[in-house]
Length: 316
Picture (cartoon, helix red, strand yellow):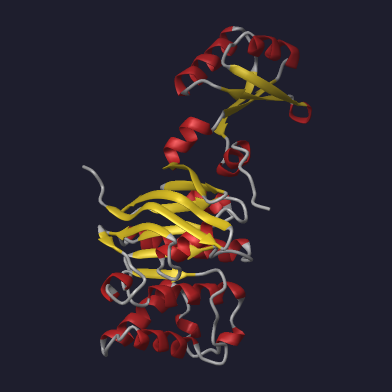
């Protein structure tokens, strides 16, 4: 079954004076996906997200949300209500309480009672700030403020969520709390595009990723496909015997690309180009050769390593 597209762009192009921020970009994101957008500073990620949020007019090209053409004019207000957009610098009214802040935006979206109060309680429970509903925003921690911004972004129940660097500057605990909320929203069927430099978070959250470079979308694939095509399998092998004997056996295996001797652990870490079956064959051959093994641990390169290996450029 082919998944319907929540977001599709065709020939999307954005130019500021002489600077081309987004260049002929074709993007497809299926319904219910969490799509991670990565790339160096100046790659065009924020410009792309702003156009998808109808906050920026494309110089050329088209944007479709669930098959409907998105325009920045007033011809499709219903379509824009499907969107929730959290920029990386959204202002907070620190003199308001948490409840009043959310109530203000709920009223802007024309939510009527009793639905409005019900919705406020729902989002406060989701972001775990019910006990802070009467607190001034100025008294909240940075992580709480960012979760409050997310609550404001979803108060009108959008079906597409656009997040630009949502965990920037957050500590590990705050990032974990934010990730858990995103997982709940995905399970509820929301399509989420998230830009972040914290690639470990994206690796945990995303179903697909896109890599931007100098305005171009140079990679776009499911996370599984990206790992399969770009990630090198790594195996840490430890022995009770001499490393020389282990290394001699490894050198005879054509799937061992290179190795690193971990002297403190009497171990060797290898880059292995084979598949899971080949790893099992390697283990079997070492045991048959009489190598006394204490560890044979398979891992693969993480998303950050893959990104750095692809050697993408940063705009000057």
